[in-house]
Length: 495
Image 1: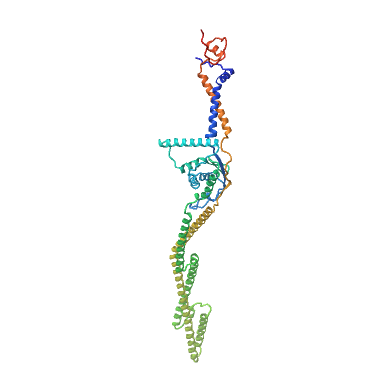
Image 2: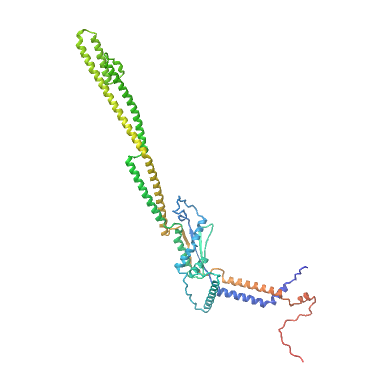
């Protein structure tokens, strides 16, 4: 079965419009009346003010002093850091402080206007507000809505009216505030920005960080001083000035003494052998002075030569006449005295070498004892030095953190930050949003659309016949004549 769509001409459409013209005009007028009442009486005006802030990322975005690692310098600007400032500016705690300080949660009595039209608008708005409160109370009683305090309502109103915007390609933050009051709205946004600037630095720091680092610095300094005193006491006790240098000098001295001792032992052994040979030579009937060996240069060599000359003279005297006996005795006496002198000299030299050897051995023992003493205390000395170094580094670390935290707190107290206001808010001159004339035009368009929709629906459900074409289309015959529509009148009675 084919669905036949009736053909409708422009004339038919015009007839429909004129046929239902008064109803459509009534709909348009009613819509315009409702829109006019809503725009000029019921609808409340919202006023907008805005402030702009320039965010220059700086020390507050650096790792805080409580982070125990080297600080990384901030280079360039980062979009996420600007977003962090946006979240701080929109925080509920900050808005709550604004409400408390400005007393926005304390209801004020509105001033009743004096003009007639203004008074009517005022009374209608107050009536609408009472109706809304009545509806809210019903919803609260049935459990569909939560009862809010005046402070919570003020905070919610500021949160819903505060818009903080930032662009990815800019470091400027735009704060917009929408409120139903024109006068004083800039003061509210000013207070929000001022509290944000006052408290933003505190969000990047930890509370009590200055006292913490001061306490840790004092403890590290006291421990460092104790370790330094212990190290100084050990150095005084063991006489340590520079352990490495002292050990090096002592080892060099020990090596020199070892060589000297070895040389002295050789000399002592040589002198002792010479003394023994001299004793054996003098004990024989015919001394053999050649067994003494080479005495080198000096008194001993001179005495040995003298003995050799005396021995040669004695031999010559023994070979001469008998009258030389007196000379021979004198020669032997000279030989004895000279030999004793040589023996005494050799003994003295041997004693000196032995004393020198003993002194060197004693010095070597003292050096060894000193080295042993240093070795025994070296571990303790190095432990104390390491402890001093570690404690000094710890003290320097906490001292540096203390300086950073103190500087940050000082900048916070002086409100020295990296966010500056480049546009202060001002009270707006006109309401925000769509202008009233545009709302009226939109209402007119909506009224016309509603009228056309009503005409379409009414025509669809209206099956009455109004024109010659409808008669011909529905009955298949042509109308003879068309009588104009007249008002109903009561016909007179006929006889």
